[in-house]
Figure 1 (cartoon, protein in one colour):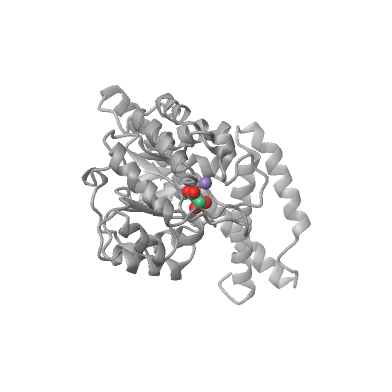
Figure 2 (figure 1 turned 90 degrees about the vertical axis):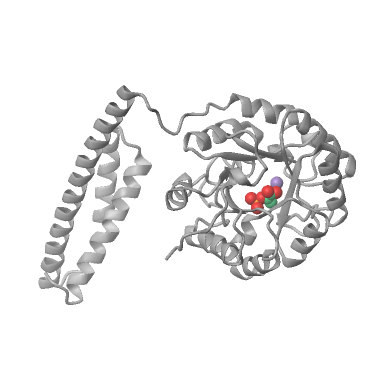
Length: 365
Ligand code: PEP
Ligand code: MN
């Protein structure tokens, strides 16, 4: 069960001046002092206030560029001194945290491979416990909301109150155009549970290719997320990691200006009345859906009894495949996507099988 988080509002961190989108930009990796400084100067000149650069890089294969390590922290300190930007990097262990603190790093983030690991999360939380630097937690690589929340709880229990999250999408075996599946519904769920948690999207790691960054950033804004973390490199094509997804500083800031930021709400009377009417309609329809699902499961229970009395197995997959195919056909007629209809009916079927099993194992008919 998720606990409430004790947070200091992002407006009190002194990091972001523009209310939305709060922007963090910088290269995937710090590569050389020149590359870091050139990128940072250009971003600062474009009005970016928070600079990112990976110092230790979690790479799939050994032998890929694994980051420059501690020497890069000096370059970040130089960025801070020279441009006045706040600087941040990824930490994946207690050692990384201590090194960052030595070099005056202003904020850290925890990467997707680390937030999936409670041992490392605890170690990082303990190492940060006497500091007051903000910590941003990326979602775990797998779409597990509780794991993400658990990581936040560990940090919060260690006394870290300047907390935020970064949604970078999830690993998937499905074939999709992006590097990671957006899985926005999980972000929405987290947002609903902790509306006060500053929420960034990382369209760079979600998209995996610069051509997707604008659409993904716009989706994040349309969902009401307040920030973006975008990878930006002075010479993207020559980057030692994630070359395809990085933008030049100019392209990065152009993208930020292209985003349409919608109001969270409107005081307009006509809008208010309109939205209230529509919401009332939704409430009635949702109630009807519940009623229909209840009736549907009532019939499933009867079928369970019937099968039990005739000694027939519950699962007839060929029949279900047929039902599902029929539903997919009809989906179009109702303006619904095949994918959505499949997900809904698979969930209904799963519950129906559970209900029938209950009957078979001696529950009420
Ligand atoms: C990164 O931000 O450079 C990074 C490695 O991201 P992720 O943890 O989201 O893969
Ligand atoms: Mn990267």
